[in-house]
Length: 334
Image (cartoon, rainbow, N blue to C red; front, side, top):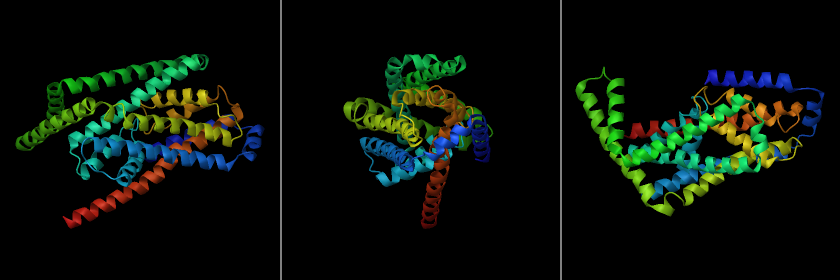
């Protein structure tokens, strides 16, 4: 956590150092706090869409999980995601919390992985649309940024292909999972390892059944409300940046901002730093510097990261404490 916070803070200070001038203070005096409040509110609404997506997906599998519980696990997921490479730590948190409320690990894993499939589909379609609408902007970033973008898109396609293959071939998935576990836990007692491998075998079956259920259910499982809430989530997340721009007295630059946010989102999927710290700030600075005044880029990036990083740490930490308290109480009862 401290490595992530330190890295992000240092990068933000460097960005401010190289972008602040006399015009910056003019923009700051014009700052409209109403738009910044709306940006915070819209971000919370987007997290609510995420919680609704999980609730509906669990319901599609026959489990009744409250929205309040789903929203709280999303908030707790934010904290761990902010301090792990490519925000990957959030997935185990969501799987664990679904498991604690009665959703088997195989079903929980299927839900979380299907979430990522929905994200990839929506980001891919949205990216294709905005690139067509504003190809000149995408052509202007540095070649290194474009290379990272192309690599990320390839990885996304590969991930979707592996996801679909896992549905078609659960036997292969079991074999790979067992080999990885046998290698990583080779020092364990044989009986203990065999018991774990047996459980993995059962959970992979649950995972396969759950994924197949999502696919076979059609409109209710794949192209229904989960996709709708995924689209609403990403639209809200991306438009939050436009509200910050308006709060700084700038035009919303909706299309340009969407392009920048998509590129940043894909780049941050590469597991380089905890929570994408440093990568997010530098990417946002270089991309938004293409269409907003240089004197305000640093201030914009700071406000953007306050909402999408520091706010996540605070609210995620509080939600995590609530979970720890609830689980400690459960243990006492048991």
